[in-house]
Amino acid sequence: MRIAITGSSGLIGSALIPRLTADGHQVVRVVRSAPTGDEIGWSPKEHTLDPAAFDGIDAVVHLAGAGIGDRRWTDDYKRELLESRTHGTSLVAEAIASASDGPKVLLSGSAIGIYGARGDEELTEGSELGDGFLADICKQWEAATDVAEAAGARVAHLRTGIVLSADGGALKKQLPIFKLGLGGKMGSGDQWLSWISIDDEVEAIVHLLTADIEGPVNLTAPQPVTNATFTKALGAALSRPTFVPIPKFGPRAILGREAAENLLFTGQRVLPAVLEGADGFEFQHGDLATALSALLDR
Image (tube, rainbow, N blue to C red; front, side, top):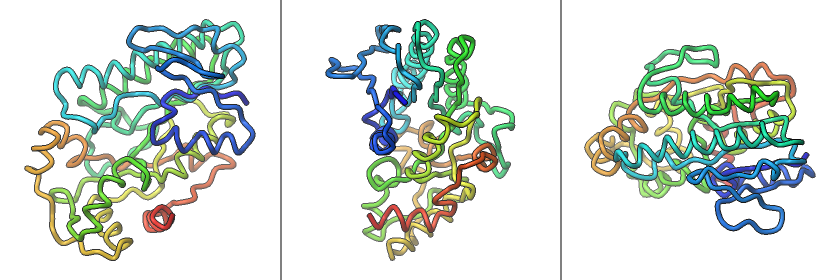
């Protein structure tokens, strides 16, 4: 297949590209910088993407978007978080719909934040959507693909949880603190953390490229855990104590109250019902201990 990827330099894209290349697929990066070689140039802010560039592309994996936890949620950055997703997604969807020989598959990024903060409730793809800033972003993010679906493309929404990788994301940020024996649960530790290893994230995307699956797909492991359980597991994997709880005022001071509450002190208990029912897909890391062992031994 000839597969175009946005967000190719991010955590997921950087792991996905070598996997696709190893399988013999041709990867075409969609880049904001001046394109070289087989790359495709685009600008979500200026709403520019030539539909003709998608001619001959079989599928698009759309992963681009500003980092949710990269900065404090000022009004300006909240606008950027929304528009980097909705503008970019609508641009990709419109190009797919307008291309004369364009992609028939769009795997478009989304997140489990769409379910809102739901406590201990088990959530699947069939659950009602939630409320709040992150849920509202995700709803608009997914809706931005409608034009591609109307044009006949098979669209799957990648509702991704916390991606565990020693090379980036939340786990990489936590490792230095935990290795010093200073790691601890966040607040009460009762909030749910729906995680997935980077390996299973990549394998799920590869599977969805050819599987007859459309609509929302939860990219999370089958066994979500509470923050307290995750903390103990990471400490055990590193042979370090985790006795010191992290009070709310520290993360709030760094991220701001709203971002800290949404990203660290609330969560979702999400189950991957679609993936578990999919023929030909199996999780490599279904439980947290197995995932951490594999990821930290590299």
